[in-house]
Length: 292
Image 1: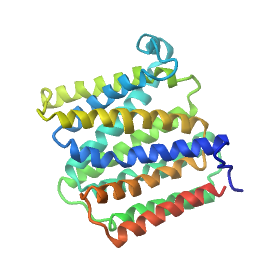
Image 2: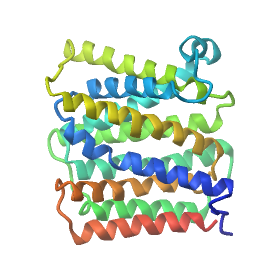
Image 3: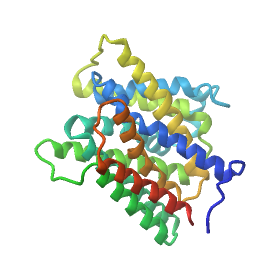
């Protein structure tokens, strides 16, 4: 059957929220290029601290920094803060070692992994339509980026980083889907912990912070924190806890399409037939997933 996506229905609101997340994540690649002077962990740290500050304006978040450590066990911090820091940090690092197009192909295997892991954990029988939609979306990502090529030299590190970023998003999404305690009001604390973790790792790995003098770089870090990694992850957390588990994993396949259009509009990527063909396949995957 076709799910209810009426604008006034709960499913419609969740779908609209999902599209908002897709749009936020879709501009991440462009913003990363603008803030290229910041090291991956440093950019992650600043973005997460900006997320912590922005999320303080959410409902019932007052006192989150003092309340959250008592309200959630250690493994919640591992999956939520670790997933936030890992998803951003590994992705930014991957772009340092391998071409962005191929990194996207590797990273966006995560919706398929999330769908399979969610079904296995919940002891659901995998949906044929979901599996078909996921494969169709993955094909769209591959076509969008001109097909897959064998990595060379340090590109292996970039692809490994993309896989780790995707795995972090899978862990974050699956945990929020099954975690029983309310978490929305404590996001400021989880974001702050993720930011501090990234900056501590930056200091330990690189021996300190590299602070660029360009104020625009810091502005982009704040935008990343408030938008894609702030509002985006909070909204996604709400979607995975309340949305259709068959449809949710397919929607992120639209992210590469949004990213491609954004990069073309910014003049950072050249438009091509394969690019638009891949976008079409990703759109077909999302439509297919909605028909269940």
